[in-house]
Length: 359
Ligand code: UDP
Image (spheres, rainbow, N blue to C red):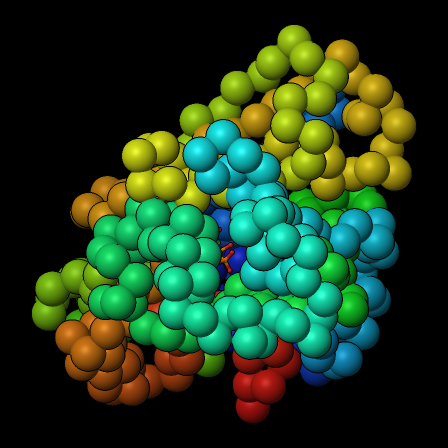
């Protein structure tokens, strides 16, 4: 087909952009460098147990943005899963986020909601909590002490003075009943969309190329890492990468919940995911005599690693601005998404940014 637009990178941002373009009558060519679409939300189904493995770490869809919720619900239905995260500190299990369940168990007290603020205003209490649940985890996750990372990162975790142990404040939450991969299949299932995988786009001067051939000079939406697009010419942006160790175990239920964070610095991994718990509605999966767990380790990104988290600091902002200035010089190019925009987007924020693009 002749094409009007190109979307390079078929993650959640790219697929949303492609869908919008297609619905507005444009013919879109989607180019994905991996053999499959879905970016880092891609899952794999274990044939033996039917368990949906989040290959790049747990993804829980949650949003308070009505337009985003409405948009995704056009394509998939959610199972109503509400995310809870437990913390293992010195072998004891606590409910995150920071609220009455955690505080009362940690200090062996029975505070009422109205007493939490005063109790936590005592520096010894807040320091003890911070050191137990945030210091070690944050230094493993970001490779530096919490004092050296931007406040906004730790503030992602809610603070409450009640027993609500929902990890997110968003009412709209869940896991796609038909699995995450079906979201991408359905977003891209449109007569105006053609998808090519194993198709890595490169930039040569100001020309976008595929396998050495210049691509048509049409509006192009790129969502790979912005520094990679320019061959790291100003140096690479600081990213955090992840390493996963996946294991199938001959037990029905390993940890009794989907995510347990290991908050001490001395435990090398940050968390253990147990994927069957994301589909409590699926009796066959839940009753399987086996389970699949994944230990997650965080590390400094090096060339060749997958980038996962942008590291926001003064130097990275300056470097990002340089790459953005270069991107602005490439005709027809828009760069976005978590890797393109170098933003710590959750899935809903990535969709929101794609919905808000003037196309
Ligand atoms: N965090 C922490 N202890 C925890 C959970 C989170 O110190 O048990 C801090 C840590 O710095 C982390 C940030 O809060 O990077 C945000 O946590 P979130 O669960 O939102 O991280 P994500 O799931 O996006 O990796």
